[in-house]
Length: 284
Image (cartoon, rainbow, N blue to C red; front, side, top):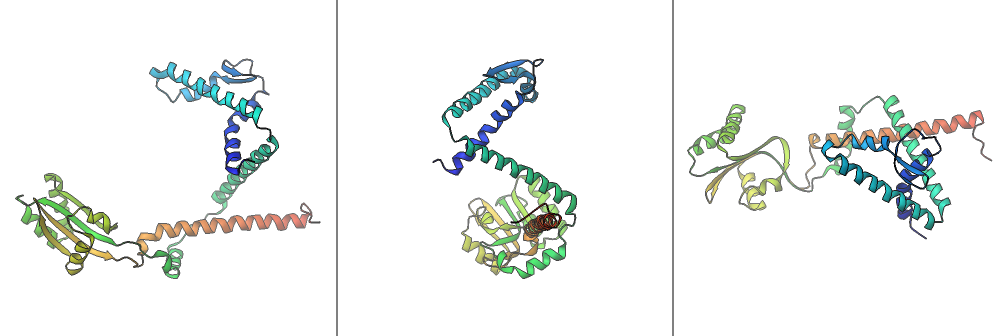
C-alpha cells in the first residue's frame, strides 16, 4: 500500500481538478471555453486572471503555455482516476484536509479578534531570567568596528586617531572618510556580530584575533599592502549567556505561541463543557 506522503501528494494534486469538476455543475453556456478534457472546461475568464499579470508582448506564448499546462494536468488527473482505485481513502484525506483548513482559518480569526494582549517587557525579562540555560552561545560574538586602509594612504594617521578616540563624532567622520575614499569598513557597535564573520575580514586566525582583542580592545596591524584597525567594544565568549537584546524577539515569539496555544485550548475546553451541559454532546 502507498505511504502517507504519496496519498497526501495525490490529495493535494487532485484538488484543482476536483474544483474544476465541481464547477461543471453550474451552467456556463455563456462563457468562452479555451480547452476541454471530457466535460471539464478551461474558460477564458479563468485564464484571463493569470494573463493579467503578464506582459502584453508575451500574450500569445503565455496563453498557449497556460492552456498546455492545464491540459496536461487534467489529462494526468483523468489517467490517475482510472488507475487509482482507493478513492474512499482519498475522499477521507480530502475531507480531513478540508476540516483542518476550516479549523485553522477559524482559529486564526479567533486569535485576531479575541487574543488582544501582547507580550510585555516584564514577561520577556521573567522568562529570560528563569530560562538562562536556553540561551547559551555556541560561538563568540562581538560589538565594535573594523577598518581596512592601504598602508600608503595619506589618511592613515587620521583613521588611527579617530579609531583610538572612537567618540560619536569620530565614528561619524570615520565612516564618511572610509566611504569617500573607498576604504573597506564595517561598524557593528549597536548589534552583535558573530566573531567568525570578523575573522573572515582580517589576515589573522580566530585565536590570534581573539587573543589580541582580549589583551587590547583596539588593535592595529599591517599585512601586505593594507593596515587593519579592529575595535572590540564588547566580546561574548562561547558558552556565555546571550544578552537579552539578542534574544528578546525570540522570547516574544515563544511566549506568544504559548499564549495562543493556551487560548485555543481554553476555547475548545469551553465548547466541550457547554456541549455536555446543553445535551449537544452525549457520551454513552
